[in-house]
Amino acid sequence: MTVPGLLANRVAVVTGGTGALGQAVTLRFLAEGGVVAVPYAVPAERDRLYQRVATADRPRLVMEPVDVIDLEAMTAFAASVIAARRTIDILVAGVGGFAGGSLLETDVDTWKRMLDLNLTTAFSAAKAVIPRMVQARYGRVVIVASRAVVPPAGGFIAYTVAKVGAIAFSQALAQEMREHGVTVNAVLPSTMDTPANRAAMPNSDRKGWAPVEAVADAIAVLAREASAHITGTLLAV
Image 1 (cartoon, helix red, strand yellow):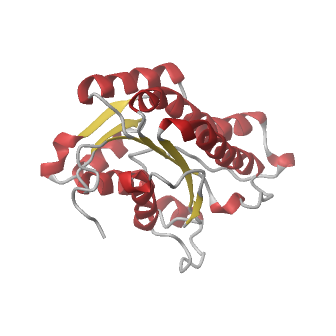
Image 2: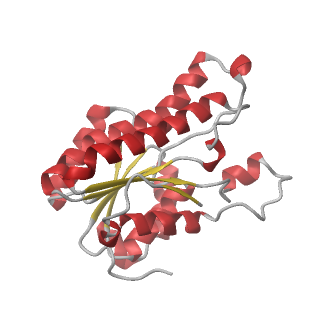
């Protein structure tokens, strides 16, 4: 259930905000009164998101083309958001990607791509945004990991290592931020019901798949001011 106003006057950066889950998060934050800044890579996804946003909410949506892996580019994006809105209160690190394959089947390019998409993007986004949160002594950081890698699984080793790294990153960062008023938590979705997953697994039983809206609900809870005492948590959805 959306509660209007819970994120009123809060500014969020949502990486991966034009993807299936990212769109659900962006729409949820806008519905709760937040300003949402989305660094995007795919113009067609940007256009789809824009069409889904209510006309009244569009002035509170900022979208710019940014390579989230590139720390310099993310730092410039964060600086532009702060210049326009004076602060960044919330970060959702939602960029990710999947590749299957055991160690014997995984080449070095796939290994690097999985680490970049699932782990380096979280580092770059946090490195760009958190200094402003520390200065303000307020922040909510939510990193999207995966339930499938707890415990670590075989068969998709590069993805597993990258997502386990994202979990470790969130927990270590939570410890570092305890004295600064910044919470850091990870959300661990099970298989999400997205067009990409339906196409990749057409014969799967989808009864246990998580709707992206349910994952967005969990992220929204962790992003609120009232969640000040929740940090270092792994929240499975």
